[in-house]
Image 1: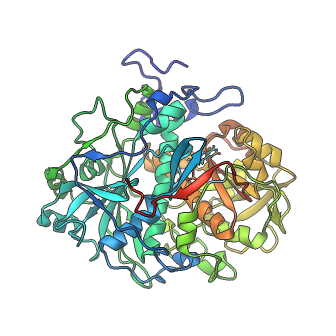
Image 2: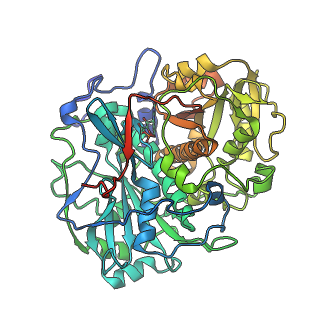
Length: 571
Ligand SMILES: Cc1cc2nc3c(=O)[nH]c(=O)nc-3n(C[C@H](O)[C@H](O)[C@H](O)COP(=O)(O)O)c2cc1C
């Protein structure tokens, strides 16, 4: 397919944004006989720099946390109110970014070196940039400011100085000790390798990063809430994304989200505003801004459909919908017995997260472990389950599972409804001949069903672009979205939220796998419609992401060194 149509020609047909988005989704499906349009080869001369820097903005290096950064067991992060809130300081902000977006390893293979981070990324291309809007903090800066996170240096670049009165107005209504964080995406980083499908991957990565931030906040005794009333223009203003004058040369950052981080309060959460005041946002935009973005590649290939879908999913502000969790399970209905012990510290699980590049085809897990992992993916009735408390919408992503090696469960196809009110809708949407049997010993609150018994290792690999990791793990899965229902409720911009939710599901699975002593891998390459055929799903449901969990096989050719060396390793 020609990625360079006549200027002005639209490739995604449709008048309404919802039609344009659906056209994008259909066009970027991988089929057995044809992959979505991409460069087909990697042009190493234009490989994007994974590190954005703002030249001219002052960089404050964050003190590297001693290990363990927070001596809490990983399981405790899920128990609301059980971690004492850390005071807001340069040390706690440092640990927040360390657990969310920092470098966790450098890898080397025959002269080539690359870094890996706490958050995963499709193709390790890392389109996601992180920001924080912070008050004056000793050792960081003597006034409130907007900062861009520089992962290679583990530092904060000061992009804007805020008037203390503007900071006070910005945070009025938020609990004492709150601050803001934000994410943006550089679509080009993913498009360089993946072409038109890249927009999807950027959204997945943003979802992973959102969950990584929420989980990091939990380790500090903080909560994190997405500000869904802040539209894209507001996100751009507060993160300074609309300021680039040198837009021809430097790659644009697209606004993703702003979230508030606040100390957790025992026994629940006082309401956190979902928006920011327009006139205060204008005052942030009018602050003194510093620095200009580096160019990441010397030349670029245009992928016009990405710009078209980005326009169609532009968010004014999220429409509000009544999201009632009263029929969801309580914690003790999801986890019987409650999980109050585990294998590893939060520090080890979060900083040790890694994708398996290959699975051993042998490791099995007990059914209780499988149920625990799935239970972590479901919000609880009280709305306090982490990380799902960060997002205000009820789950729109459900799982079609390929179970290979779970002790006590028959191998085969399973379904997990992450919303109890969607079981019947899923049953009606899927193949008529499925069994819909509850597995033995499954906790009552977990809506997990056996659909069909049988060895589905080859099938799982086949629909995951032939990747063996999907068949060689203990289980793999396709994440299916209640697509038409969600876009109908929230509009076209919610297309991005669906991927964020899928990314968050993936992030929880990554960490749950680490806690179990095994590994996971996100799978963005899968054949969309063949997955629908396996489960019999109509087009009102769409598969958005795949995942595999199992016993990893290490690549012994690689050498590994820490994200930051003895001397800070940040030169
Ligand atoms: C959205 C997404 C899609 C991915 N798709 C694949 C895939 O199709 N196949 C694969 O082997 N790894 C896939 N990965 C894993 C990445 O390659 C991996 O995250 C990246 O190389 C960084 O390594 P790390 O996860 O160990 O930090 C995916 C990861 C993400 C977040």
